[in-house]
Length: 631
Image (cartoon, rainbow, N blue to C red):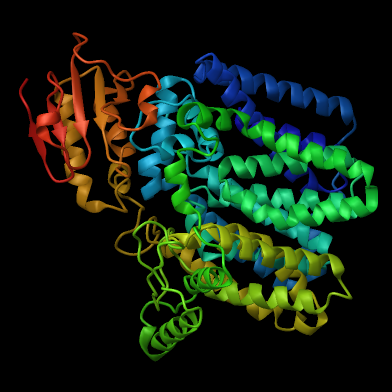
C-alpha cells in the first residue's frame, strides 16, 4: 500500500518534469508529507492502526493512479535506456555501476536480515514506535527516556506505518536504505545541474561508498533520512535560484517541504540549511525583488506546517518547542569565539581521520601526534565543557572504527576537500558550483560553531558528505582529473565493499555474521552482555501471564528488545506503560494505575531501589539479575 502510492506519485511528476530524477525527488517529498499528514491526522482520533492505514493508503494509491491516467492517457515512453547509456559511456562506467549495485545489494540483505539493534534504536527510535503502536497515536506519554518524545520523529513515523502494516519490525531498517537509494539519485541530478557530464553524474554517487552511510543504511538511525531530505532541499533551492523550473511556486513548496521533512527528522538540518537559505534569499531578491518575499514565505510556511504537530506536542509537554530546555541546551555550545569554533573544527575533522585497523604503527602515531599539536594552537582545553557534550571525553583514535556510531571517512574527507577547493578556485568558470561549495563550507563552520563536540559527532557529518558528492562528480568530470577518475572510483568501490560486508553491528562475513543467527540474539549485537538477563526476564514475566507490564527505566536504558521478547511469549494483547516517571511527561496520560485487579508486573531496567517497588508488583529486572518481590 505504501510503495504503490509513491510509485503513482512518481508517474504523475514524470508527466510534469522532463527528467525521471526530478520526478523521483518530487514524488518522494509528496510521499513524505503524506506520511506526516496520515500519522498526525489518524493520531487525533487514536486510529493509527492497521485498517485505517490500509484504507488511507489504498485510497491515495487509487486516486494517484487515476490522476496519472488523466494526465497521461498515452503510453509511457522512455527516451533513453540504461543499456544505451552504458554502451556510450564505456566499460569503466558499467563496472562502476555494477560495483555500486553490489554494495547496495549487500546493504539490503543486512537490512532485511538483522532486526534494529543500534543503541539509540533500543532506547528511543524503536521504543517510541512501539509506544505509538500501543497507543494508536503519536501523542506524548509518560517516559523517563524523554528523547522518545522530543527528538525529530519523521523516520519513526514511516517505520510505524511499516510496523503496523506488516505486524513486525522486519522492514524497519528499510527507511534508511531507501533514503540512501534516493540520495544516489539526488546527487547525480544535482551534479548535472552543477555542470557535470554523464560520467561525472555517475561518479557523484560516491555517497554510496561513504563508510558512515553504508553502516547506517541498514539501521534505524535517522542521519541518512535527514541527508536525503536535505539533498532534496538543496536541489529544489538550486532550481529556484537559477530559474530552471517552469513552476517556481510549486518548486518553492517542494523546497519548503523538503526542509520541513529534514527538520522533522533531525533539527540539525536547520543549522546546515542556514547558508543555503541566505544564498537563496540574496539571489532571489536580485532576480525577483518583491516576488522573493512570496516564494520564501512558501518555503517557510511549508516547513513550519510539516513540523507543527511535533512543535505543539513539545510545547505542551515541556513548555518549549524544541523539547526540555535543560536537556536540549546540553547540545549547544556555550561560547562562540574564534578559538572555540577552531577547536570544534579540528575535533570534528579529527574524528574522520584514521588508518585501517592493524596499520596504526608509525603512521597512526604520526596522525595522532599531528592532531594533538594542531589542537594545542587554539589555546583551548581539548575537553572544555563549554564546547563538549556533558562529561564525555575527546578520544583521538589513530585507527578507523567499523561501528555506525563513530566510523570515520578519511578518504571521502580528502576527496571532498579537494573537490570544494577546486570548485572555489574555478569561481570564474563555474559560479554556481563555487557558491554551492562555499555554502557547504559555511554550513560546516556553522555546525561546528553551534553544536558541542560529541563522541558520535561523525554520524552528524553524513548530510555534508552526501551534499558534497555532486561537487566531487563535477571534479572528476573535468579534463584534468578524467584520467584518474576510474582509479579513484575503483578505490571508493573497494572501501565501500569492505564496509558493506564487515560492519560491526550487522556483518555479513566473519565469525559474527548475522546470516543464520537467531533474530532474537541479533537485537543485542551492541550489548551482548545483557542478552541473557533480558531473555530470562522476559521468560519469567511471561510465566506470570500479566495483562499489563509497567516499565521503570533510566534516561538511556534499553526498552525495545524487552517488549519484543515478552510479546514473543504473550502476543500483542499484553500492554506496556512507563511508571514512576520523574520529568514533565509524567502528566501526559496514561500512567499505569496500580491495583486494578488484573495481573500486572513491573520491569525495572537498570539499578533501582527494591524498597521503592510499588506494592502488588512482582518481577524486577536489573542490568545484572532478576529478583522476585512478594507482595
